[in-house]
Length: 363
Image 1 (cartoon, helix red, strand yellow):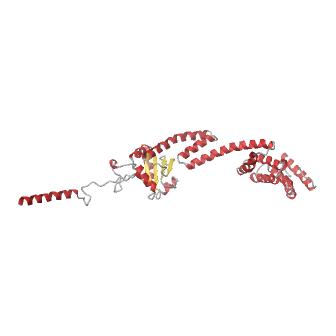
Image 2: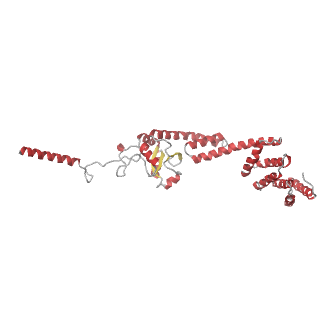
Image 3: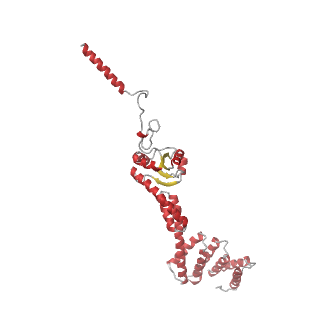
């Protein structure tokens, strides 16, 4: 009996020893601190960076200035993720992509990664013009933009984002070549378009818009030259052609807005045709064209021509009072001029006044 009791006591002591060994240390002594490798964060439960062996995924910094300093020292670029606590796609990327060692190795090769909360980092958000989340930025270590992606772009694997990085870095070499081409010939519309396309592909939409605009201006300039030359030929033949009407309705107003002096001669030609030579004459429109030239080119050497033609077209439209008043004012304004051309126009005004006041029709 004593032997049985002794065996039971020994067993209870051994069981108690096992329980004591497995029980948690209430003061945290005698046991390793638990570590957490939350996707894309790399911090342990105390908010400290965990040992490398326990880390998984990209080990982001959370301070842009510190990241810039580290990038300069390491001669690397910046990989910046703008996120927020409420952004669903941001959480998805953090879980599926940034937690992967595949993307971590790719980023570490060329970049210092930094993860920023757009709700808290107002200055950084303004610097990179961030308006939506997530926004992923590739930048030089001085924060000069290389490329951006807004949203996931349908890329939810580490491999897809690694390819995105390779593609954007590869395009920077092409960008340098295109910039050189544009600098060499700023009027090369094809080079401008190629440069705009490259910026667009890199997600640099504002830069793309600038160069698309420049390319558009050059293409439009070529189109204007073509239209005006064709229109000149057609008008000389007095042909009623869609091109002539297009120049009248679209291109003349556009050239006036741009203060492009090519509009002066084409306006004179149009006005002369529609006021004098067309089957259905329209002197009121011809007069308005002269008034438009006066407004667009107030300092033009041809101002006296604008004014004289406007007065003559008023006469042809049947408004002799306006025509006489304007012609008399022109004669008065320029009576002391020694310029030979101006004297010719002043003399013409005098003959106009004499003819109309005598009840005749000036032609």
